[in-house]
Length: 67
Image 1: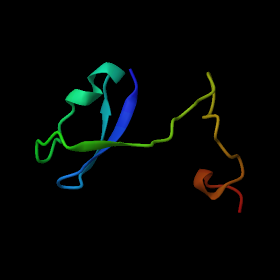
Image 2: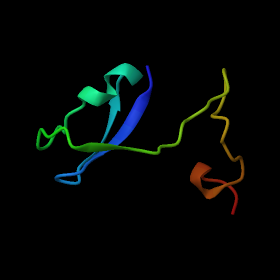
Image 3: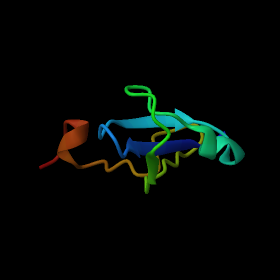
Image 4: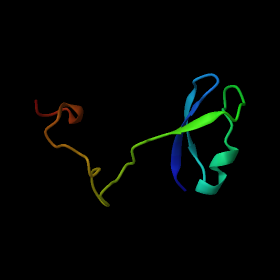
């Protein structure tokens, strides 16, 4: 099931929700309860099986090595 990112049009709260594509129209804001929400464009994650994520950079600062 996909994870979608939403922002409430009323209170501005941003949240992620694992929900089927068919049920996106039923989503309510967990903060204020309104159904006035907007789906945001979000990135997706891919990973290699049996190893590090596909976007792993061996020499970057995030991994604690490299410069």
